[in-house]
Length: 316
Ligand code: AKB
Image (cartoon, rainbow, N blue to C red; front, side, top):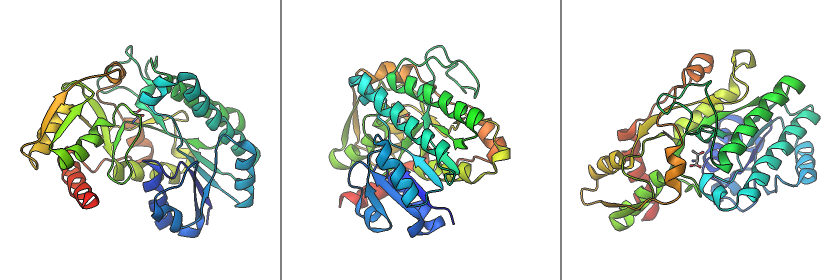
């Protein structure tokens, strides 16, 4: 059985991925790590260690000591936060990835790496609807630039050193377990909490801003499916587009109102509007579907019902 390491286990994706991986590979085989403490179920449900991925010595010792065979490197500074501290965000996003790629190159036991990219690799010159897998990538954010450079590095380490690194261009991810932090798509999570707590929400994007989204269970399933696919089936070694659903704040508001009729929304866009306006409204994920069978099972209606039910339970 492979030993798996998850970096960023306290985050929005990591806290759910660890749980799923532990179900598949067994708790003792999934090593959760983060720079900070993680939710109790992650820290108590299997091995957990506070670890800074920027510390390459600590990283390599951990990997060798625990005989790690697969690494999911999820730690990153997201789009909104990265614009506030661009050089720091660049350093964190790039240096951490380079540490992982180097370790994977050097340590023979490390067979596979997963690293998330994002729709942020695209920019205003990219076709915004049904954005193709292969198209112009001229991002205008430091987060997007780091993801674009990261994709190229992943491809380089694959071509040059045979490092088996796999990646998805996540759209906005919607989940209830751990809140996202510092992203442009975060409004689509925040609105559920404010709807339940206050019956009102102030949205930092304009009402007609369409973006692609995926509900977390679909994202987790896709991530593990990609990692478990035969390497020979994969034709993309930078990062795969995965689409999901496309909606605007106004459409999400209408959907939540079916459950909370009095929910009011005020639109007051901030600097994140320009970021959202430079991103795809929907993406073409036909490569992911054809190569390894990506499928989305949650639509807006189904996702909204589950989000409200689960957040209501959590806030009780
Ligand atoms: C963000 O909004 O920064 C992220 C992303 C789309 O990569 N959720």
